[in-house]
Image (cartoon, rainbow, N blue to C red; front, top):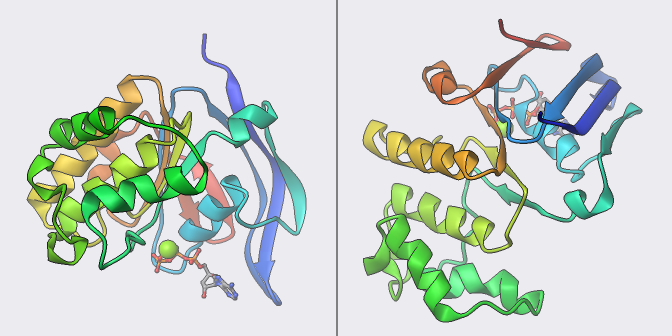
Length: 208
Ligand SMILES: Nc1ncnc2c1ncn2[C@@H]1O[C@H](COP(=O)(O)OP(=O)(O)OP(=O)(O)O)[C@@H](O)[C@H]1O
Ligand SMILES: [Mg+2]
């Protein structure tokens, strides 16, 4: 039996006098691979930021099952947010050093092997392709040992081949028990999800 890990109850969000959505309610279950689809400017990044508690709703509430879960989330940004003049390896351990988390080098290298980018470890990220950078972001996210990963257009800047590689990795991670919450404008990706939510007008509803 899967349990509700995030409850979204009657949420309204606006910027100034522009309403993005209102009366939005749904639940996220442990183990979900949720894809939100919607057009550009429809509120995809907004809902992801609200769910990840980067932003707050005007009214209604978004509640996590417990606080420890809230602390075990990772966010993969559309534009990677990697530090250009650092190597891949330095980029993924940077937040760990900051948080004083200890991870042995071999477990980091294992992740580079798993995602098939071992040869980028000592390369400056500036020299990496989009697909490689997205996998570095994924490694950085995983090293926090998250229970939930939020992904904002994780394939937005990738070609078809890299898009499939990244989606396959996300599906694999999800099978291992991590809840994936992703937004995209690309309807071709919805086959990877167990649930699809459509952002349409002021509303977010489940595709059936
Ligand atoms: N901080 C902000 N202040 C004012 N308006 C904002 C802010 N953030 C987003 N908006 C507006 O809210 C709407 C939804 O933005 P959002 O970034 O969620 O769209 P999106 O679906 O992610 O679009 P895209 O596919 O282009 O990334 C847009 O009209 C945007 O201009
Ligand atoms: Mg966006």
